[in-house]
Image 1: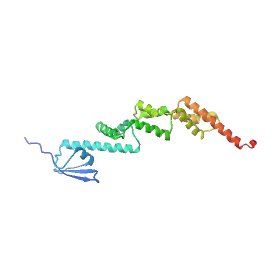
Image 2: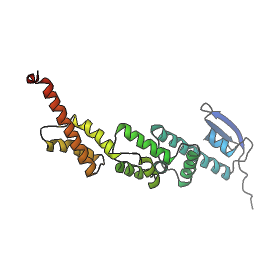
Image 3: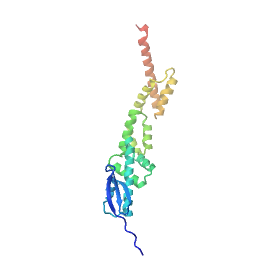
Image 4: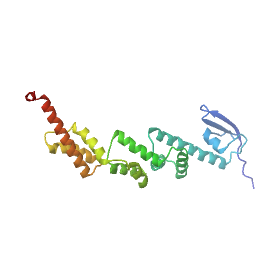
Length: 227
């Protein structure tokens, strides 16, 4: 019985793409292109036998390098929760083992931290689009943040204070012909931002009272009868 042919040998490893990749040349004429990181992780050297096992490990390592690059691109746009990262990488076709490996790598590097993500998310909302504590918690839960971390990140949100600030801002653009029209504009906005009925009603009443007082002061300041 004929013996199976011996595996080809690695006869050359050349650095290409400014050192980012290596071209592996085999004694049977085949060539493979792998990232420098994948080759380093596997520890491939000239003279090695290009066995199926070695090539398989290079392919697996290359997949993890690709997953890492995809993850860094996602993080370049904005921070991600661990759940978001898992979902995004899976959508890009990476297998569960590669996803697990990459999530662990990012977590160890401090690039994935759900508690830090939750705090940053809340601060960003407070700065750009304030909303109620309950809505913020729902947003965090929807991104895979556990309930305890979501509670912790939103615990300092004062719904009445936030709602009052938003109501005053909306009052400057709201109609003041009737209280009902004012409520439809200001109250409706607050409800869409996640504030409950009591908080919305109180903030709207206060904003209306302040708007009416300001209007009366303006009239008094320009009324000739006051001179």
